[in-house]
Image (spheres, rainbow, N blue to C red):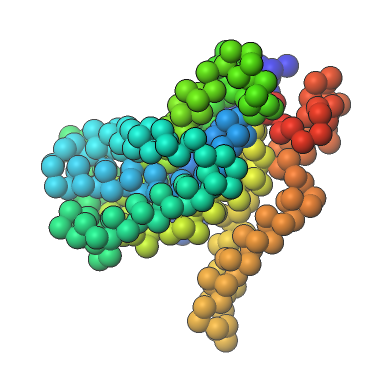
Length: 342
């Protein structure tokens, strides 16, 4: 049964990846790419929050670090674009590891505020380092992604990036599915249920939290690198604080501790926001209507999920369509998170 649950979503996702980039028009293909990148970021955040029990309001900072790392390495140091893309997640993970050493000593809302401060500091440093990053003007003329003389540009650019974004997103989901069923994954699930209990059982809680924090940053950094090569222009405004909040809401909608919920949450939230922003551009609407609609939908979705589906969409669907086994979230002690890999 466990194997079937892993193969099913993977098969469906693979079929979608193969067909949609060829079928979608350019405008929808761009949305498809951004949903894939969001899925990658949210897969790491869901792992961090749902299994390690750590809240982060700074994932957009690691998204930015990956994007700027890839862009600067390819443009200024003339490194091959694929090598620059490979370094982007490593750079984000390394910074997360260093920052996480003091940050992860904090708990609860203090940790949330700490990651929020890291996001603000990161954007401030990027804006001030004008000679390197271009400051508020942004980093321009990022070279196209390519393998040797073969460059990803022209009419097929979005199709290639569609496969790339969702291929990497699927790999991150499959890696997470394997991780949470491994020995470290079982330790993380114990950590999510009770940190004190996990510590008493001999789980190296501090080390595991730091490693998952770095892994979630690596996912965000990789997505940021792909984003930089796709849009070829980035600025601090590309990674606002609201982007971190958006990632958090996506993870909540899909279900914290649900592996495949990352794709569902990213898709639902991104599409709803896009639809409302389109309505905000209808003639007669106030100039700031798109932004107001975005903030309104974030708050509405979060409140609605807390009231109606507190465990997220995927865990709710699983509970509705099959009888939970003993030891599942339904039979768990009140206050514990559902960390059954779905």
